[in-house]
Image 1 (cartoon, helix red, strand yellow):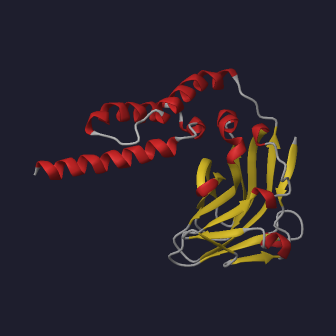
Image 2 (cartoon, helix red, strand yellow):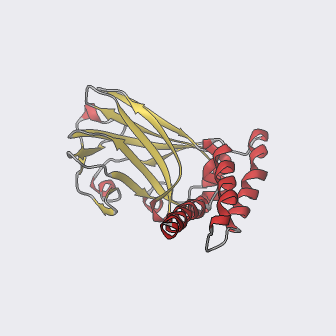
Image 3 (cartoon, one colour):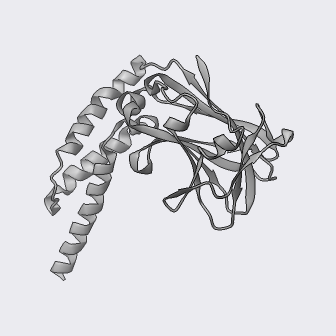
Length: 239
């Protein structure tokens, strides 16, 4: 089963898309394009204008999508059409986002220069099994370093995903790792180094496409940062 997630056709669509720049959401640098050569389907496309020094992102909250009741558990792929009028290729990253603009999972692909490219993002069923309820939207990132405009159109989804036998092999470790991360002490000491490094190594041993299923990775990451502070403070004390 397939469906249209966002059309980018008109001004109503424009004001449902947000330009995320430095934590702020605006419609600055976004326009509706109606020139046929920059439209892949429908009556318009989204023109994204990048200015020198900017690294903003395009965010569409799930309540503004054409399928607001989308069953993210069955989400198999997200795809979007990109026209890159520049001579050089550009990397495009599609992210599924949860609260705090944190990334659940992402996929980066290349949009070739001066042609339409369809960027397809396969969704991992295990990740959605643990994160479907926390999805707040879809985000696009353009890896650009110059002033340029790009055109975005026709965001689609394919449904029908399911956990495979191969997926099941990772579920036990993901659940155990998530539990062990939750059991980390609130206040770390130097004695916690081995335990912390063990958790980090276990996380990194999980294939990257499954890591989004570790729903409390932010807890582990913060613990590592806190431990570094504890270790640095201990070194100062010794001096």
